Amino acid sequence: MTKKNSRYAEKNKIYHIGFHVIPKNGRQERLIRSISDYPITVTIGCAGTGKTYCSAGTVAQIYQKTGKYNKIILTRANVPTGKSLGHFPGTIQEKMTPWLLPMLEVLQKAFGSDKFKYMMSKGEIEIQPIETIRGRSYKDALVLVDEAQNLSIDELKAISTRLGENAKLVLMGDPAQSDVKNGQDLLRFCNLVQKAGIPLPVVEFSVDDIVRSDIVADLVRMFIAEKL
Image (cartoon, rainbow, N blue to C red; front, top):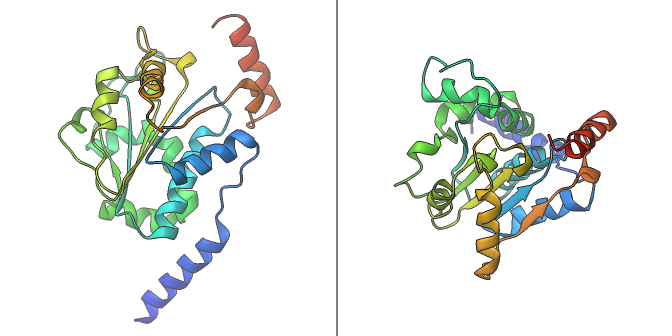
């Protein structure tokens, strides 16, 4: 091993010790455990509950500590929140990066800036549009889907049936913040799975689980009360 590789290995060793996803409540703990134990996990709930942080952070830990997976795949529905600024120029990765920043920021913190950039350049962290999911099979991969409340039942079907051997899928969403008409297909998917008796955990957060700040909790309660 060269001195450069030795320093890189030592840096990774420090990372193993330094980064941990520490749950702040029982539901976060259940989410972390579910992602570790099951091939598919759904987590739903309002803003500020830590869904994205816990999910992306746990996936990073699983990737780093087990050595069983080849890549982390990130995707989300290409639906803007509110008015759109139009199409972003550039490659698929450049176009989708603004939408995926919440997950990318967690992964950068988990892996460290240098390793994060290396993984992005080597395709170990892959940005995948929803439109190109169909037809692929994900083996030895960890798949994170954000804003899943904006996915149709056909898109949820396409994504969930792409999993191959040794793969995990995490669907994250807030049905109350759907940006599409009749955007309740994520809940429908959960109900269908439970009806079929498939062991797929659904970790649901409430307003009382908000950890971002007190003002966020107050605002979310206000919007719920006003049915906004």
